[in-house]
Length: 340
Image (cartoon, rainbow, N blue to C red):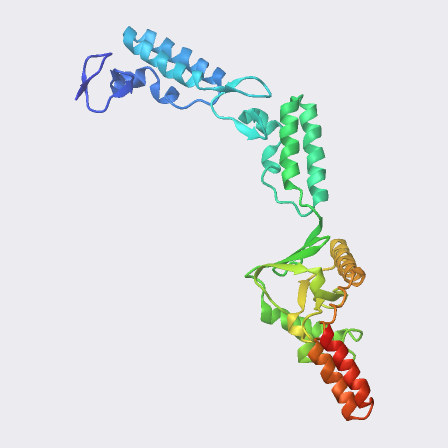
């Protein structure tokens, strides 16, 4: 058992401040349970340091105990860094780019609402960027914080992203200028969607003049992320929901030899302007890829392999046999070829 350096009584589990032991009763007299903790801000630590020393002085704590408590607070306060916004020393800083700011300043620009957000398109990224920059300017944040905000949003931009739409049926379509990304979750119910798709096709006279054949209704289902390269597809069909319960964008695979099972279909349950924009972007992408393929220079035909003298003699021998040339002409040509 240790001996309390304040009341000199024995204690089983003393509170320790450096080499100083304080029993539980003396620790409570100094309101220790309220201030012995980790501090985030300098001013908060300084306030509790003065409060603790006041309590210890009131209960006649010996000097080694007050020195140890002072060292407890000083070690925390010396470890603190300064916030790039308010300049106050703090124990824990939040990073925004190269800037470090305290919790209070972090909350002033409502960071929790945007710092971890996944954006649907680049337009949404820019919209939130301007909102945060305006708020940072209003709060008078320094350039290093503004640069940090810009760096955060720059990293969120996705090159070539046109739009991102959620079909509400377990699929999300991200449309880029040169490709698409179809994300199909495990919640996508293939059998149920297929039945609804057949019903939609049968109701759409333009898509299927008579009835929806089995081949027409086939489509490729790839759970997870599936990259759609425009160069592999020859066309895209777009059907809004209208009176049906299902709408779709179908990409026709040009390398499938007429097999519809290689087509990719994105399904949605309600019409939306973003889906219109997605279809237009896909159609443009397919047309651009087809135009690029048409304009690509064709490789020149390789030169015919040179014929040997023996091949040429055999050719003239055949002409002699069929009476196309005389024996003299053949002998003359043969002698000429043998000299080469």
